[in-house]
Picture 1 (cartoon, rainbow, N blue to C red):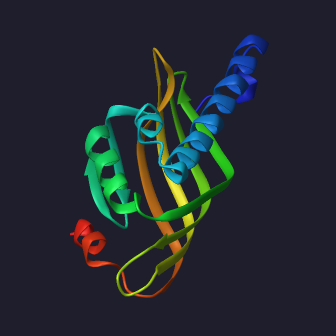
Picture 2: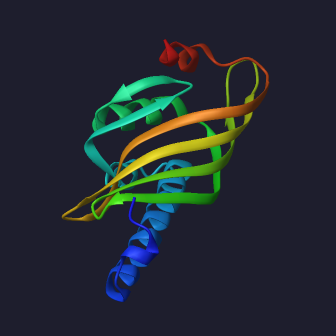
Length: 159
C-alpha cells in the first residue's frame, strides 16, 4: 500500500479525490437499494460483481441486482454506513471496510418480518472508464435481531 509520504502533492490530491468518489459510490449504493432504484444500483457495479451476504453468494451484477430486487423489492429498508476505512493497493484498486446498520421490514400474510442488523461491509473497488465501481461486497454481521416470520417467497431466495 502506498502511503502519503510516498506520493507527490498531485498524487495526494488525486488520492483524496478517489477517496471521496468511493464514499459517494457507497452512499449511492445504499440510497439506490433503499429507494428501489435498480438501474441506478446496477450502474454502480462492474459486470462480474460479487455479493456475499446472509442471502448467499451471488456473482454477476445482473444476477445480484435481480436477487436483491426479489429479496427486498417489497420491503422497506434503511441502510446506514459509517466510518469508512479505505486503502489503495495501487492507483486503480481500493479496498474498504464500512461499519453498517440496516433495518429491513418485509410485509407478509402473517404480518411483518423485521430485521435489524449491525456489522461491516468488506469491499473491493476498481477504477473503470466510468469512474470507481464496486467489484465485491462481503457482509459480516456482528448482531441480527429479528421479529416475526420471514415470508416464504423471500426465505426461499436464500437457499
